Length: 333
Ligand SMILES: NC(=O)c1ccc[n+]([C@@H]2O[C@H](COP(=O)([O-])OP(=O)(O)OC[C@H]3O[C@@H](n4cnc5c(N)ncnc54)[C@H](OP(=O)(O)O)[C@@H]3O)[C@@H](O)[C@H]2O)c1
Image (cartoon, rainbow, N blue to C red; front, side, top):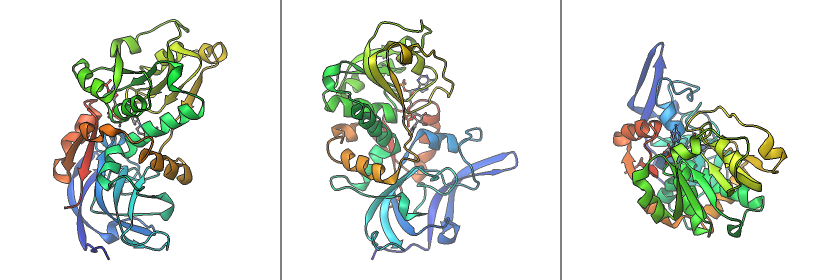
């Protein structure tokens, strides 16, 4: 039976009137929300949404005080469901975690059983969080593009925000599946690193954020876009006939200014990707694939490890667009 902690450390954000505070606190189990599974959190990760939750003007936190951390991996300590026994290793991410109920940046979490994904064979808890929400979103984007018919022989695939968590995982997964991957990045000095992940061509940020005609030369057989406002219009007007873009992020903002021409004259598709409320059955299937045929070999090269004590600079860096791969957060030990 895993050890049951009386009190545990947590990174907490709070708003009191105009005052925004953040830092380490000691919590007890009674501080956690209702739920039928208690998990000793061993690993979490830093996602863009966490960077927003940890800033006063981030507009992500919907309850205070809040333990951010939209994903976590750990060991079940107590469970009201026979299917989830104490000692089981599990993952949880999305839903309200780290947004309107306490998330992964704490020694313990309590969640509804319906949110829990058993750790698939082939992944450690740390590797699961090296993938994390961002990597899961990249994997889901590839699944949706391929379910719509994308194949490596179709032509080049563009990934925007390529050095970030979603982007770098998408580059790695697509390259390892045999695609010709082009990376759009604002960090020219990271091109060599992106090549080690499998990128074979590059677009500058200026090229993918420039204004253009409603339709331009057909170029991309598919795309994964984690940047949004600045890059999605470019992708739409340069997709090949019948191609699709998986729109999964808004690192540059939420607005979308485009025309209907890519859709009605080229039959292109805008695939919306939502990892947070994806149905649990599909969520578990995608995790099983992330442990097998979608598993990026380059996990280690893209991961920086932090702890609760060294988490804050990573939260600020991701908010500032300075990500290079993924940060995992060692919670236990
Ligand atoms: N749909 C979902 O379920 C889901 C799940 C996870 C994340 N997301 C969203 O996906 C986005 C990326 O998340 P992430 O975890 O990968 O974040 P991240 O690690 O910070 O990566 C974002 C990357 O976007 C690029 N970028 C940032 N600001 C930009 C700007 N103004 N113009 C152009 N490019 C910019 C940067 O890459 P380069 O320097 O290489 O260009 C940056 O590293 C966020 O909006 C996040 O909320 C959505």
